[in-house]
Image (cartoon, rainbow, N blue to C red; front, side):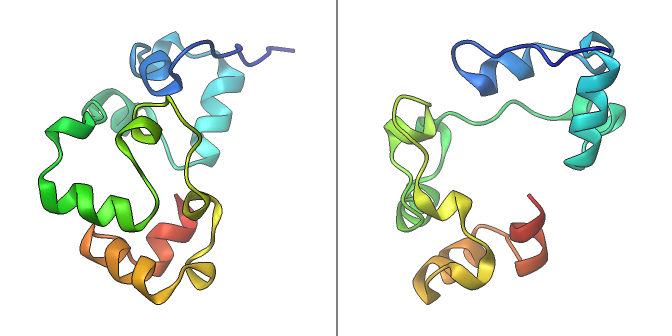
Length: 109
């Protein structure tokens, strides 16, 4: 049985350094369950840095509880990240909508 490697450090940086072919079959299976495949994994753009976000996007992510420290993995992620769409406040839903989320996209990501 193939195991999943333990992530150390910044998980965004860790996984972004790997191509799809670098992943074990067990890791590919898990990422596939989350909606990833070889094409979108290898084509995925790097996760933007907080400072690369527009001030408007920073404000919208802020409504969802994100700060520069949480965005960069230095602090815990906000509670909103673990909520379903229905659990978000109307203000959080509005911010998520402005960021391009729909209920389906939010609940499935």
